[in-house]
Image 1 (cartoon, rainbow, N blue to C red):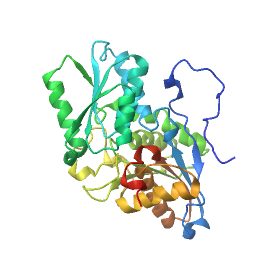
Image 2 (cartoon, one colour):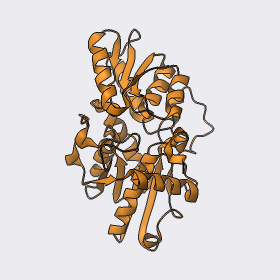
Image 3 (spheres, rainbow, N blue to C red):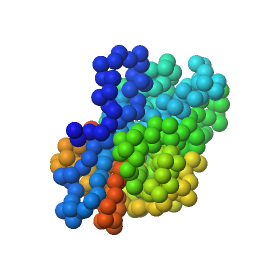
Image 4 (cartoon, rainbow, N blue to C red):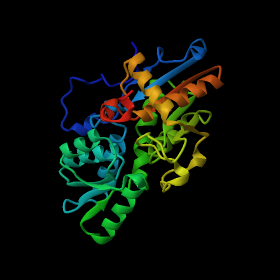
Length: 315
């Protein structure tokens, strides 16, 4: 009744690979966590729960497509190690997909990412190179580029920030799912900006369905923030796949309110998510206060279980 996703379809069907479970995540309507001033409006706000992917995040979609496309194109062969820079979720996804397909994986990531993310990646058998936390994911990117330059024949560099297969994964899945799940009624789409893949691919697809749909990107409100997975683009290495001209709007959200909204989703809706989901939810609330009617969908990139050791759940 409440969940509009297709996650329950074919649940009894036997699967040949864990990768067959990527995508078709649920869309859930929110009510209890909405502020009183928007409850009486003709507005619906839906959360797209990407934590239902087998690797626990939205990054399962691009990780699968980037690796499969590389194999199909002959760029990734069994004698090469999959390599990339990550803030955590893509690393988990690459580790899962690489293991499922029989490839070794190495990752570079800031040493201050949550302990849960580190342990999950290691559980999948991947090797981690920890980089300077003060340099965020940019430091990890620089490290990987040097490693590839030094050992060009050893690695296949996924390069999620500049890989078109990243946004195409969402063009062919996430955007289609959201359009079908809202029965074409969506008016606003909101997603956080990390690599930019989610909002670029989903936004492209939704604009084809209806050019009037507003595509809204979410960034932290400063370079020094606590919203894991999101980039403050102005002071970061800009992802090659990200084009702000494809957005109708960018909203800048603070760490404190992002944490507050994530906690409200957990405590009022029973929706356990991470801080980037809280940032997107805050953006959805702000949009709802500006309009009289509409259907707003925002991406919840992952679940809250990866942040139990962080300040998100220390209050």
